[in-house]
Image (cartoon, rainbow, N blue to C red; front, side):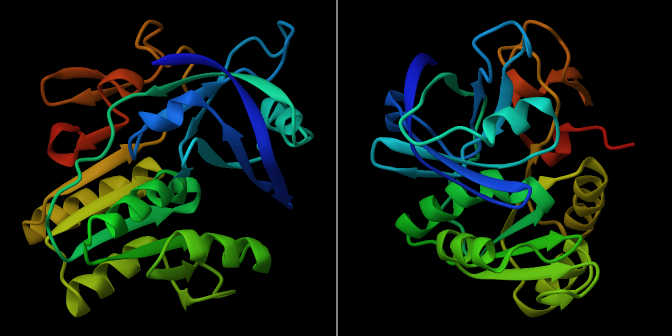
Length: 252
């Protein structure tokens, strides 16, 4: 883990969604599934850092894909190229990179953020994979084009049918099981979606790793604010995760 003063290299927002690229020493040690904690203000308001999955790594730069949802991310949305920010990371346990093929990645909403880095890593490994991305409604066309270039083999599902296939990410999973049965599944998204996927994967006897979304105050396991129930007791998402074997989580 590093504490770094990182420089913003590029920052673009598309409505409520933004891609922030920063130059940081931590790029050299970052792994897919890990995250960073960013201080959004030099004052004590807001006080706590915000956690963000690493969306992409390119040389000495990492990218963050985030949604404007509160005061902290609203402040971030005004940051300009050249600004120096306080960042801590990379944190947490990342995905297992296995030589299995074919592989399926399933994202719900902003769950696509950690899977971008994973997808680019799988490409370098020569792994045969495809990605199901479920969202409520269509995002900005330019943003979709940018993400499609980063996250290869992307199949989009929208609840309102605004783009791609109509349905949920779990509908995409069921389609994939019929058409392109994977040997391994990675997933990230809302807890109810991951719970549904875990039941499906268990029934199909397919190994599954999940990246849990959670509110984090410290990012290093000290505050116990992000715990979930596991088979062997409480699990700290920030320290023992955010990536877990789905069998280690109690989903009820």
